[in-house]
Image (cartoon, rainbow over all chains, first blue to last red; front, side, top):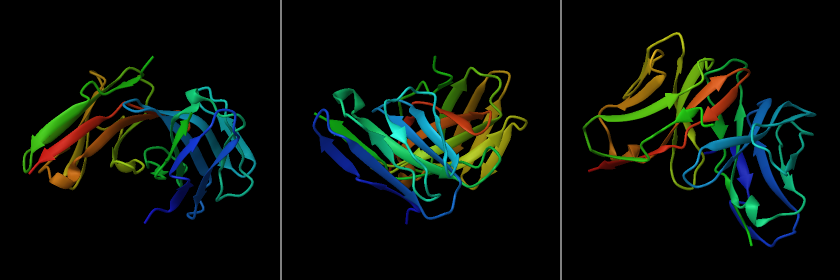
Length: 114
Length: 111
């Protein structure tokens, strides 16, 4: 059973709508990440957080924003959705301070903007 | 500029045989390399990693080999099982847990 939960799993929404993709984890991990993946492409880091009230932009420029008010919750918001935002969004968390231990990923949200 | 490359988008292997998935990288500053497995409609699952100071790491049926001079790593699965059919992502870590992913190789293990 997954310890990191993303909702909704699938979302079809009209252009211009505001949306929030939810991500919650029950493991108490400080580090959390949002990745964006288009079909057949690599995962791109769009946001990350190293703890409460800490958020940073990733390597891929994104019009989305994130917040980290509680350790377990790391929502991603798009103020005005556009067709170019159509993609899969993956949330992940990590327990360890050092490298090489890998992330725990959620099942993702597949977003379609029409 | 893609720093982690998986040049084979797909691979088919008979059950019981060896699966070899390849990955090339360009940034010599990467200090850890990881492999993830992804089933459809699920998030990636961490499989195995290797430090840049090692050339081999083994975990059960999975072995990762690193050739630093060639900037190449490979994942060997022996013996391959139908449940191994998935997309495998190579990833490289440099700096404070900044991870760069490849585009994935879809493995099909034929019973």
